[in-house]
Image (cartoon, rainbow, N blue to C red; front, side):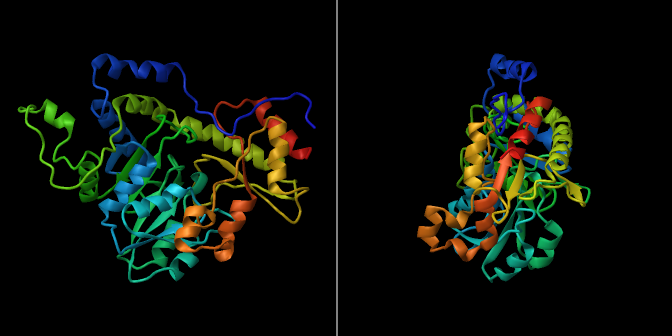
Length: 382
């Protein structure tokens, strides 16, 4: 196959001297847990995404948990979740004591199918979790039309920092949203997440619950006139607070977000052009109604035309130094969900096929021209 062997990871965070220097201030100040840097990061993230409120958390999973609790999801409720998504999306519903109701996805976009969502509505439906998979916004206007007005729309925007739809940013499309800063995302804080909302009451509930249920945060208490008095605790909460170390890193990364996305968009367009004549490989495209965040470049292997099964293709590419991954997994095909809810592979054929035939190829901000050319050659020579 290819002549010069390289090792190209599926993703690699783009960090350097600026990030290294940014963490010095909280280390030297002694304020390491949630404090002034978290507040700065939240303010900057809210401004960038056009929302009134942003609240930093330990991960996107905990952000989702808080978002669902904030809108009142609890035992007896149902939340509609795409069947093709990372398992944390569905797990967060179970953490609330509610039931995840799976809906199928569109094989073209990998996102939840509004038509199937409409079929899943019951009197117990509390919310729909709209996952913006791989950085492409779900069809939020169609989802709004598909559900009754009292059903809340929660965005799982884990992959979608900087994405847009109809001139609005991800995180401002639904009632409340959750973002991820895992190292596979466009910007990272190591681990970390963010809740965004326009609703002041939802923001207040989230703020209280992420800090053990405390009536005031440690920063407010310590800077107030009576720091020696502990806060009151009127609700059950959690320790879901981001540290100032992570926030300092996040501030630097957020400042690079638009540059990162612009570079990824350019590379994605080049990939699409270079790979369009491979008949068995479908490539993702920029949406006509918005802006893809290009967290990942996820292709679809046509099983009828491919030279070998998807997994064999991935194995061959791995041998050539090109890392690949399935886009994500079909939740209904995972052991816990099969055993708990009795789901079968064919229950959600779109999600089943995306599980079997999706294939992410390397796309990140530390790849060179030669790396991209190497990936294309490796695919062409299969």
